[in-house]
Image 1 (spheres, rainbow, N blue to C red):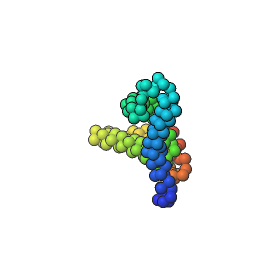
Image 2 (cartoon, helix red, strand yellow):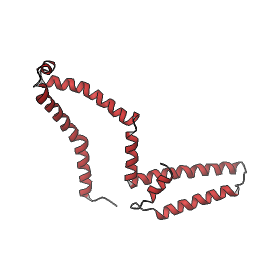
Image 3 (tube, rainbow, N blue to C red):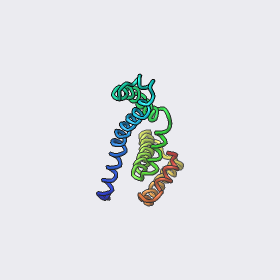
Image 4 (cartoon, rainbow, N blue to C red):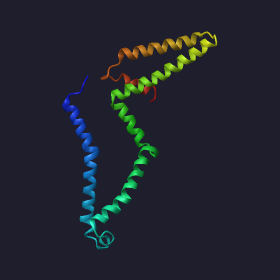
Length: 163
C-alpha cells in the first residue's frame, strides 16, 4: 500500500529540515551569537579572535574534529546507537518483520543443513528430532497465519527470540 503523497512529502520535509537545514542554520547561528554577544564584549577574547572570520576558522578547526570524534563514540564506543537501533526496530513494523524473517531463515537453513548432513551420513532421525522439526513447522505456520503489520505478533516473537 502506497503512502499518500502529502505524508511522503511531510516526511521528506522533516528529514531535509532536521538533517540539513537545521544543522547549517544552527551552526551559523551559534557562531554568530557566541561571537557578537560574548567575544566582542570580552576584551581578552577579542584579542584572541580579532575578527569574526578568524573566530569561525578557529572554532571550525577545533569543533569539526571534536564533533567527528563524538559521532564516532556515539556509533562505536557507547551503547547509545545500539539502543536507538533497537527502538527503531520495535517501532517500525517493516524493519521488525525483516529482522524476524532473517532470523527464522537462518534457523531453518541451519536445521536443513543438519538434516542434509545426517542424510548424507545415512543417519536416521530420532523421534526427538522429528518432534523438534514438527514444532518448528507448527510455530512458523502459526506465526504466518497470525501476522499482520498492525498487530503485535512480530513484537512478541522478537522478544521471545531475545533480539
